[in-house]
Amino acid sequence: MSGAARIGGLRNITLTLIWVWLLLFVLAPTLMVVVASLLERGESQFVIAEFTIDNFLRLFDPLYFQVFWNSIYLALVTTLICLLLGYPFAWMISRASPRLRPLLLVLVIIPFWTSSLVRTYAMVIILKANGLLNASLLWLGVTDKPLMLLFTEFAVIVGLVYSLLPFMILPLYAAMEKLDLRLLEAARDLGAGRVALFTRVVFPLTLPGVIAGCMLVFLPALGMFYIPDLLGGAKILLLGNLIKDQFLAARDWPFGSAISVLLLIFMALFMLLLVWARRRRADSGEMGL
Amino acid sequence: MSRLWRGGYLGLIYLFFYLPIAILIVFSFNDSKYRLTWQGFSWRWYEALFSNEELLQVALNSVTLAFISATLATLMGTLAAVVLYRYRFFGKRLLHGLLYIVIMSPDIVMGISLLILFVSLNMPLGFWTLLLAHVTFCLPFVVVTVYGRLSGFDESMVEAARDLGAGEWLTFRKILLPLLMPAVIAGWLLSFTLSMDDVIISFFVTGPEFEILPLKIYSMVRVGVKPEVNALCTLMFGLTLILILIAHLLLKEKKA
Image (cartoon, rainbow over all chains, first blue to last red; front, side, top):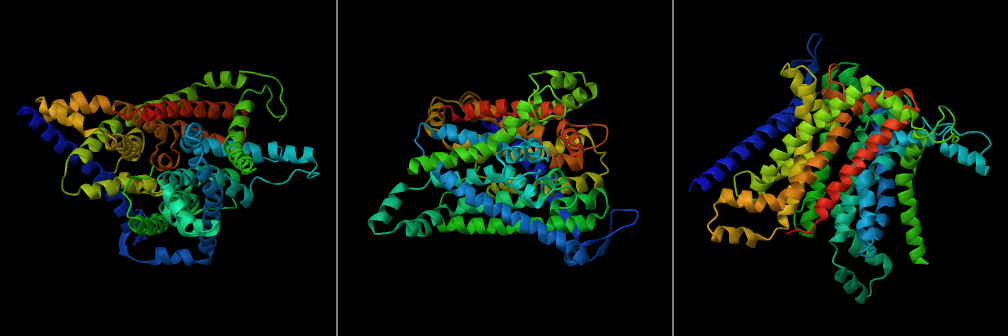
């Protein structure tokens, strides 16, 4: 019938369109980044077709290694804080009464979707020298002169945690919601204590959520260049700031690409970890968000 | 006791989430330029925003861009979700995986990779490059949203339609699409929000002749805290809040 032909046509058109789109705007550009990272910097053009691995070796140049290491350190601290704050939080939501749970959840979904730039700016207001936090500390008598909170490493970590915590909580919640409570009862009946219950049952079963959450926090924490821009002054740089500078100021595209390839490698490692954890759980391959 | 603890902990985290935004909103109505203290309620910063013609043009640019990219992403994403759900085809798992990777991949990598692409194609940076970039990062979110609704779907409806003699096209139009509509609209709203809020990707693919709001806010915020910026950020937050709540309600609506 003509209906079948039309839907068949629609299917083919859709598939062609989506494949062409992804090839052109995702796969090809990513491949170009990888290629650019292995080429030399040009004088008149951005790159010249000369193979080299110097761009990757330059990350170990003391000049950049400091930034590189500091950015990894900040991202790790941020991820750890988000996990420690987010895990019990997600657990409490997932165990809240069914009446309350939708409200608790939507209150996490709102910051998840809100512009992180707007939220970072709100943090600037709080942390400023004559901002609210200092005013409260002075009023409480904790300090007698305003603390320098803004433009410190502390401020950058607070800003990163503030922006990224919802990205940890939501995948954790998704994993906890699916948890079969009978497994907990069974473990308890078999004599598991509270510690064993967590380390042997709950944590392994929610591991995919933990890995997904850590990936969604760690990778952006390396790249969100406006957070140290606004909260850390010019002193603290993330890999994202380094990439941005290579593309817009220094015009060293191959080096900027090499740093981006590093981010892609981190992402690939997380993905492998996630596949491994999911396979271990032999769970349905649902899309996390 | 443990209930009290739990409530206290949840409360603290929610306070951490919402207190800074609440202060931002309160200050946007404060009738004082420099002081932290409350000087009385005032609309003056909002009036200043709405009499700033340059800023209004930038806001219009952003809304136009978000509207078109959300619409294109929703059209393509809905069709893709239906095809992914209903048919077997070569490379199906790969397509799934690729969309998933686009969601997960750090914005900055997508930003510079698209910059490299556009520059090597000699495309002038501006509206068109922004549009292509925004459709690309919205697309997988629409697919996931619509696909999510499809997977909770009662297959017997489709079978019933088929038994009554409806072809594939009629089934799609009369059964699938109406049932999918809430998810399609939600996908559009989420895309619109994503597009309105994106900083990192737009930063790399924007051009001088087409300024958009998030980047304008970024350049304003870098200069420092100003009451007009408080008002602008409050409006952005309000817009996101409304769109997200509608999307959330649509997705929560009982599945057929």
